[in-house]
Amino acid sequence: MTTAGARRTLRVVLPVLATVAIVAPLTWMWQASRMPAAYSVMDMGHLDYGGAQPDSNASGHTHHSPGHHSMPSRSITDLVVDSSRPADVRVDLVTQHQPTASSTSLARHTVNGGSPGPEIRAIQGQLVEVHLRNESVSAGVTLHWHGLDVPNAMDGVAGVTQDAVPVGGDFTYRFVADRTGSFWYHSHQVSNPQVAGGLFGSLVVTPKSGIAQQQDVSAVAHTYGGVRTVNGKAEDLQVPAPPGQPVRVRVTNTDNGPMEVWSSGSYRLLAVDGVDVHRPSEVDERSLTLTSGGRADLEVRAPRDGSAVRIQLSKAISVIVGPRDAQAPVPTQPAEKLDLLTYGSPAPLGFDPTRATRSFDYVIGRRPGFVRGRPGMWWSINGHLYPNVPMFVVREGDVAVVHIENRSSEVHPMHLHGHHMVVLARNGVPATGSPWWVDSLNVAADESYDVAFLADNPGIWMDHCHNLKHAADGMVAHLMYAGLDTPYQLAGPSDNQPE
Ligand code: C2O
Ligand code: CU
Image 1 (cartoon, rainbow, N blue to C red):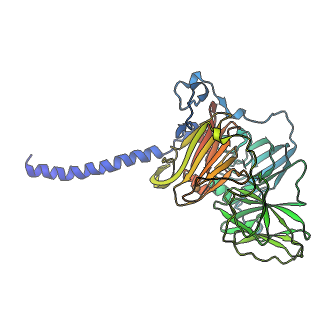
Image 2 (cartoon, rainbow, N blue to C red):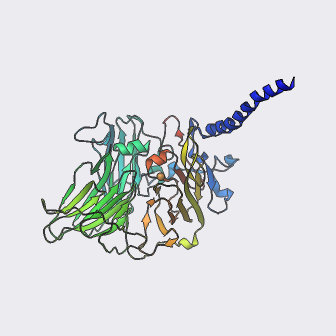
Image 3 (cartoon, protein in one colour):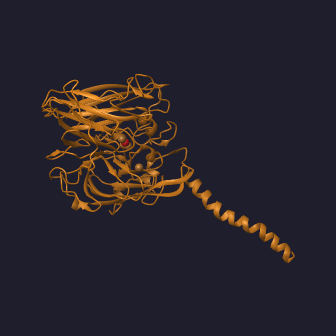
């Protein structure tokens, strides 16, 4: 070949090589991010033992560990309540798709014809049995009992703890309402559109002795297609109460973003995420940030002068407590926020977080890459993109601490299934108030939290962002107890898509 010919060849070959050098790794990354037709949550990501030894006897993480045939593991399907125990509370729930939003319902998905679905009420210790039938939601449905730490097989996560219930199918949930408080239920199949569309309702567990307030109301806030509502109506919720009467208002935020709550009068914050605050004081001129999925039980008193008190659920909608037709001033939003790091007074936790046996990081970032074959800027967990997310491993009895850090520019409501976490510190500043127990924690941009939980509820549990759009984009990790396995698969014939 002549020198000129060689140059010509190089002119062709070099750009081709350069292109291959760029495209080949991209193709590999794209290929690696695509999800198989069916896969187990057990195969997802990487095991994180939180600094403990992955002892082989108890691991039983069959899919990851080679030679698993000799190592029997227990199926999460065994994690149920005693099947011979009769139910104390029985509820039938039917899920439907509404082809068009009607004047009576803004929802596209309903439970027993409405949204929110019926409120389930139980007394502490009662066995609740919910029979779910899916009439017409074509993607299938499940029910997750948000904040109630039910046995794992009842957790309602499609592809992890059950298959999505197809049209015409049914599923029976049974669990003991073993703690008091305000909870809610929602579908955990294709959860972003299904929850936004209306597949949810509230669940309240009261103490055997009853509550101190004469009145007890739920205020479930939800935005349907841009319309802010409380208890499904785009109008203020009127709670008739004679002057001086204390009322308990159970506020639930079912939207993807945080909601500010404030009041024209003073209030006490009785409980957060279903856990009583220890010695809650009167709060004035402070707004409370209620994170996505979170609940706040407020106590307000109908004013003695015969007027009403108004609780704002964001600027758009309110709850009015007082005599019928009484005036309720519209309160301006306080500049200051109630800080739960210092609210209430200390009380025992029931375990010692300074003796943690596992220590995990949950660092949220953002980086370019591929998720499910799609290129983009995606949420990362400890630097990795979905599905290469951590599987946090514990054993029953472990005390786990988690350092949650938000290095992205958006707020993330972090929700751990099956457990309540107690906040130890925010941005390194220790908590000094009442134990601040959460199942949903608002982690704002650049914030960090140290939380702890006791591993007392065996299972495979989601640990995800409750901005369900973020979850659908891969902000999902899991917590598993060593020695467990699940027969369910993500995707697959039931098309299980928990996010
Ligand atoms: Cu309220 Cu995993 O969800
Ligand atoms: Cu998020």
